[in-house]
Amino acid sequence: MINSTQYIDDRDLDIIPEDKIHEIIEKNRRVDKREILDILTEAKKLKGISLEHTAKLLMVEDNDLLEEIFQTASYIKNEIYGKRLVLFAPLYISNLCHNECLYCAFRATNKHLTRKILNQDEIAEEVTALIDQGHKRVLMVAGESYPKEGFEYVLKSIDTIYSVNRGKGKEIRRVNVNVAPLEVEEFKLLKDAKIGTYQVFQEVYHYDTYKKIHLGGQKRNYKYRLRAIDRAFQAGIDDLGIGILFGLYDYRFEIIALRMHIRHLEKEFGLGPHTISVPRLEPADQSDIAKNPPAPVSDKDFKKLIAVLRISVPYTGLILSTRETPQMRREAFSMGISQISAGSRTNPGGYHVAPENHEEGMAEQFSLGDTRPIDEVVRDVVKFGFIPSFCTSCYRSGRTGLDFMELAKPGEIKKFCAPNAVLTFMEYISDYASDETKQEGMKLIKQILKEINSPKIEKKYQQIIDGERDIIV
Ligand code: SAM
Ligand code: SF4
Image (cartoon, rainbow, N blue to C red; front, side, top):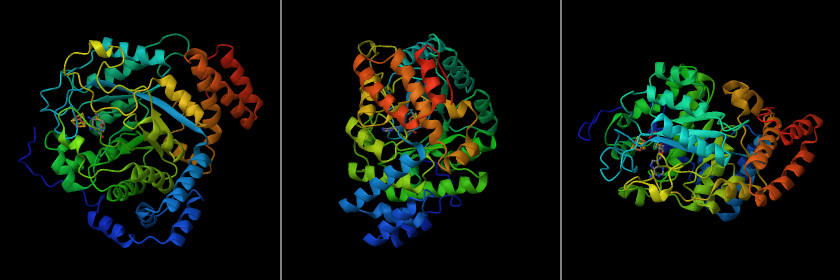
């Protein structure tokens, strides 16, 4: 293990030129109302905006101008994705970790935590519980060291997740993964295991902060982590997710750095990430930093940064987790979030073992802001006019990477999103929803079907009512 006394300079100025980022921020500090409105008008053409304009929007503090930013983000989200909001659940398979990230309960030196590595039977039990709630998409998550099988454990776990079937159409149809950065050859195996998205968050792009907070294990190597997405692309995975853990360093710097990262990927591989995650630091067992973030992001700034990301990189999915409270999540839906987790547990075994039976020290990775069951989240999404979607169609129809972008850029993707959202939501309503959710959901489905106005989709909808499942548009 690399320990905190070793300091290897592994910054990566080719991708993250810090001086240039500071310069962009300094040059764009002054906010002129007319200029901001012009940037927003330009943004509505759905072509994204420059780094300089992104920095300008991030400086806005005035509430009326912020409202303009929110409305532009909402317009863009609606133009590209329509009203759908995709739902998923994280599945923590192991909390074993050799790294020393000061904000995380799973870090190696946290002796207070009971280590738990789910075996394949236990993973199957977790998946059973998730399928029985209505989930179709899972994000498999693990700490960064594996039991004795090594990386094989990850591959076996993906197979196990796909293998559980609870009746017609009642299965997990897409497994995304958030595990330690890999070598190209290992990424190839991950691709062969038929994953959806591979996610890895840089956490904090600012180099000195990164080094102060990641004290041991492979994650201490900044460059190795930053280049993980390159290696995944080289291995042929074209559906990739990046993210920032907000609260560690100034959010304006971090967003411009993330845009620099995307620019590098577009230059090298012709394609940026498919998703961006925006976790905000939450309290975690035995972590001072998690309780007292060094660069806290207020709710106002958090909403702003989500909206600015939607405007800045319009075709990239934005993911919000249950770290946030129901109120924040509601507000974020309209500002451009396109995927949310629901009914989450962040401790291995959290779905099938009742909380009263958890062993002492079986802490969650961090505390959750939204602990509502999925049915309540679904009802809430409907109440705010969005269609809860369990769609896994793009990835299974090969619409990934450049193919996805070719559809997204001319605004074609929502022609797939809305029908797939309606069909998969109808499956949820038929198989899992409470009476109250059914009632509210059916009103929305009828309205959306009217808007779609397609005999072909009506027919498919009828097939779902007649008991067919997993009909892909
Ligand atoms: N171990 C892998 C890693 O670190 O990339 C994958 C899983 S890790 C459990 C998933 C993410 O949880 C991390 O990338 C980090 O952003 C987030 N996380 C860790 N501690 C957190 C905290 N206290 N509050 C919010 N998010 C946290
Ligand atoms: Fe391990 Fe990931 Fe937690 Fe860091 S964030 S301690 S790598 S599980």
